[in-house]
Image 1: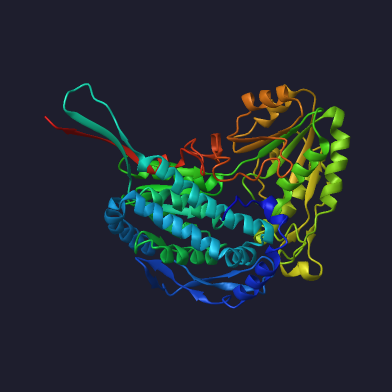
Image 2: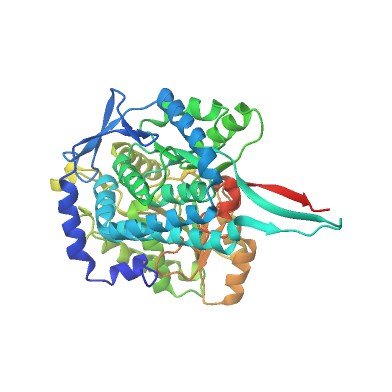
Length: 522
């Protein structure tokens, strides 16, 4: 891969379509199978399975997957603990080489992996391919970073004659890695890369909404040369694993991406149950604001908000959820946002022209209807959308309309709750100080954006906004589109636990602890 591939460049590449559509047909041939779990490199069945069906059309059976639980987690953890001794002692250059081979294999299979993502979670081809390319860049960025940092080995200096000290960053042990549905491969691979390249091992519990994505990625890790036991894949409901994860003293750390409620519960239980402090790396969503001042390019702003609010049906922790528009340009901006939102093509994400596919499941569809109803009851105006789509082919899956709400009463829970759906709230403001104050009025702090052609306003925003990933004038996505090596994905406040973002220069430090080594030569 000679150049960086992003969502924008993928949309401009006409050559992707035949390969992607061929991959869709090839993936059809593996749908409906029963899949094992993988412990110490061996396939295992537990005697109980669950079905995963496509949100595109629930008549499509993705497959049957093992319903693992605490016993399987314990066995997988023992395997990871055993494998840690050899993997942690492997020369870091060899671990880097394995990650580079994995990146090459993902690139080789990029269309097949994108097609699996589309079938399993309903992501359109452009976003699915962008996710796959993000994985490739995650691996290569961190491989380059390990090389640049010489495996995090640093010679030190001592005032004592004859002493040769050095600082060496060492892995912790066997980690529990818990990944979500919305980026079923990229977010899993971000956490797993951090765990593995630094010499740790893993028990990986993927979301039950995307188990085939996990199996496919696991198979490539094995092909790349990840040894038996270094990664163990167990499927099943999160509730079945939680007690074992938080209470088992063999767990060296937890890496989790998902909801705030689950993340904070894991945080509290893990820190209280373990015999000593252990690391926990959390990314827990957000309620992301966009500020549009009177000095904004409104065409740019409308495009950026539409893409950030409704890309992948708003099912991104970085999705734009709250928009604050300066009064002088409020009506004009709203008209432009409406124009772009009305042009959105909703439908089967396997089709080339689809922008919005289905939401992930029936529960999400029901939550959408509840939020819209609650908004209407509170006196808000639904100026676009608000309907669950059930007619024709829509009735086979979980489809809803992109929705714009205005006049939602300030203080209403919809301003503060992460909806994780294609619903955006829009309101007016008078001064930039007011807008920033309201933008910061949240427990979350992941992504935020501003549209203004006045750099004084932009810099003021950067100085005062309490979010970890911030953008100015981003037409391609007002709050979305962080890329490895460009925008470290860092959550502040309730959006994260470490302040060191995935895909950035400090992320790998989350998975290592320092050892000061001194040799005396005299």
